[in-house]
Image (cartoon, rainbow, N blue to C red; front, side, top):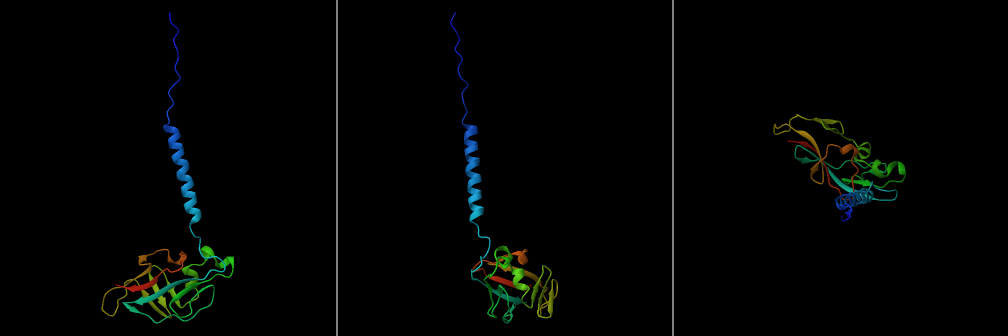
Length: 159
């Protein structure tokens, strides 16, 4: 009788290919996340033009303010941190608004002493709502948003 030869089990490359794809995906995600800007650094000087529009009418510029996130009364948010405490993700629109006579929530916009609440009527009789646009897109997290150099910001109340 002939001796039977045992053949080695055939190896599948499937698990190895899947593992390689997973490694590439993890490395790619890590590189993408680490390359994302975390906000302005000490010494940067970023500009984000902004406007305040009430019932379709642009308001006059806000007065010049102090701080590392401020305006010169020119309808531009100037971001130039002088310390780590005001750099990175701390250089937010919320930090900017604290220096101005403008207060914005999801339901109201206050400029100087005039308050506009969602549902209040504009001169044309239509109800208005508060919205903040960054580069033309609505943002609900505006207070924690860190503007990047060149962002276009609009604080709006209207129909």
